[in-house]
Image (cartoon, rainbow, N blue to C red; front, side):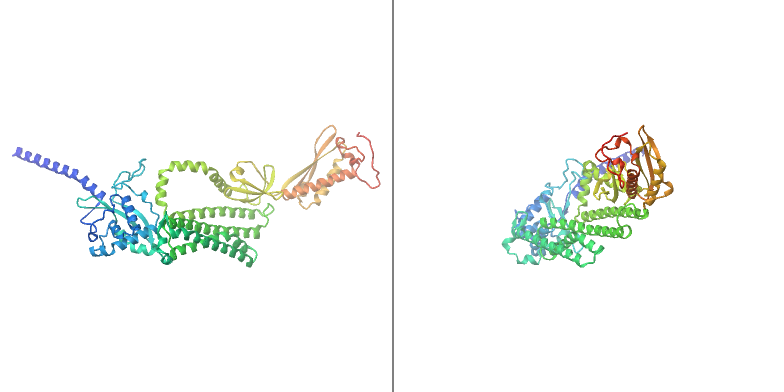
Length: 571
């Protein structure tokens, strides 16, 4: 009994193993068939026999055949490239040609379709020699031709691969896409203007139709004239507005307002008056989105700039280091806020443009496929720009300089007038403007004369003869310095001999001034007064090596009743 039981167990195990092996062998084939096509009982039974002109073996062949047949107005044959399984046989015969005609118009006007970009293989497998695409070599049984929007909803036009029994699989427009054709035709079909175009001008000529080659230049000319009129009208409006921030703001937005109006009017004309082919429509659509986004962003930035200008004039006025430190720091913060607003605006506009023209899908694949190349390009081409932007934010956070600070940069006195993304604008003492890249500025040493206080010690040096009376000169210096309004802290005034030679001595006078520029003026005034005093009252104090002997001895000065001296020599 035990032997018979063991024999039976071995027999059952062998049967199970063979059955499971057969199942494993059959499963991949079954799964493979399910991923390569849709199995159906029949296709378009109401349309009759498929004409020989209809080619449906590959996606590229099917769409090329569809466009050729509809171009020749053979809509009955083109209907064989639609899967009309959602319609009864009678409806297929009745509506097949009409749906084919409507779909042809939608494809021409909706999305720019490149037939050559469609797969040329029967199984529509993705061919990628680099092997970076995750689905390379895998067969597909459906793919997207276009994605169109109607009444706020998105509809895909897709191709599917169908097989009836043992017949060769064919590619057809899928039933769901066929059902959406009437709705898309209402959105993208011919508009009211096209009803008046003669039929002979509707023939194709290259990428466009004949009437489009005539209408597009005229259309662009009219839109350009309208933009010029809006620009002129906004310029006239600035004269009616009161002087100040409103007129300044309106004067700065003439160009962006004109572009925004042109974009909106063009979009309205394309939506309700005339509809061009997909080539022109796609180009117009991308251009209009970019113009509208740029115009709106520019208007927002002009508003921020006008607001900053108004605050500057009201709180600070002329930008220099005589203004309170808090006011100058507030203005510096405003400039940093402006850069942040610009960054946010540019980012938002870029996202809006990319989302509207639906580039995220292809852009993401492209970025992933060529990440290393893009990194190198950005690193090389954008290094300077990115470096300036980062340095600009560094200045805004650390604040080694502020708007209105007086700095000595490369031996030039300059007021910091503006800190922007990529450059710093400096107002030189002679009222010229020095534009310096941010990275260049922060990589060079500079002297900030306003970082803590605008007060500054000034000094003037005089070289006099050894016989000069220093006490007398000191008293005159104190008298002249105290007469200057910009000399402060009189208790710090001082005058000392700081050096001597065998013939002369160096006398240096020190004074504290309210700010660097006013201190420079005060220093020049005191020097001139001291030189006039020595020249007129004590010419003998001049060092002998600079005494000029000529027809008139300048060392003797000008005194009433003194006759000019002639000749002589230095002792």
